[in-house]
Length: 341
Image 1 (cartoon, helix red, strand yellow):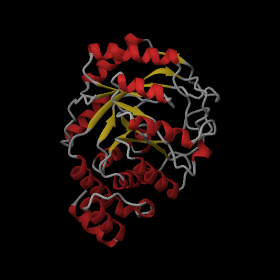
Image 2 (tube, rainbow, N blue to C red):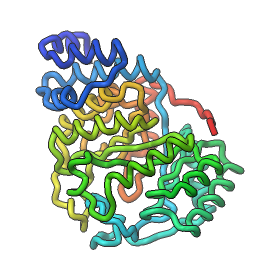
Image 3 (cartoon, rainbow, N blue to C red):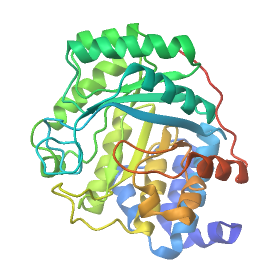
Image 4 (cartoon, rainbow, N blue to C red):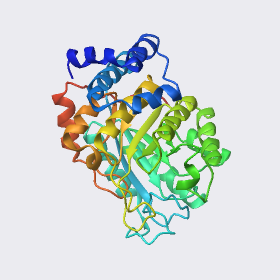
């Protein structure tokens, strides 16, 4: 992206306004303003990404946070999230699998070896039972004894007692995605409500853990609903927002949903950064399919300041070396480990 691209933006009032409002004053765009960003013509995308990149550098700094994730329990989930092949309600090829503690420790060591500062333990459950919580406690203790890395968890909806336990055990960050806009949520999930997700998010923040709360776009939502989601996430003020793009999985209700257009994905990256100037915005699932190598590079120069390296829960990601080499090529320093809990 060049200075000419930025100069061309003067023909688009929303970009001029965003430069003053977001870059200048640090105030995120409103929902109606985000719709305008998502509706920008193709020739304005480079300028929007350039502005988003400048916002990221000013309000977040140069560092890029690297994270690895692994599932302690895969498949067999009782919820009906229409995008997820881990639901036990769908005829998908994913079957229930439990990972033992030595495998988790090994994965944490491999993740730390990439330079990652965060290791997230994920379970496909509505919420953890006593058995799972005990396993998580044991895993945290073993990992902390052998690996110098922050530990995050994603275990579904929590009770207050479970939130307090995770905080006491030193969990650095908890992931619980909103996934989509409140107005579109019933089209995607029927076994629990949007409000139930918000309750867990509120308890996590109140307990002092960092909240990771993300989005999955490209599920058939409108541009207006995409803007609604960005605004709702901004109001929640999570520390981190993973940005996922739908990778339609066989056997799920969304298996026939088309792949999101790469240019729409880049517009969304710019919009989410301009909605949340100070938030960690993380490249997550589906970027390989939606954006490819070139689009991945453009997104890193368009507001993204964190990446998940390696594979995801049920889909393949880019090789960790590909992302790490790209960060080096772009002169983007990897964030150093800092344990805050």
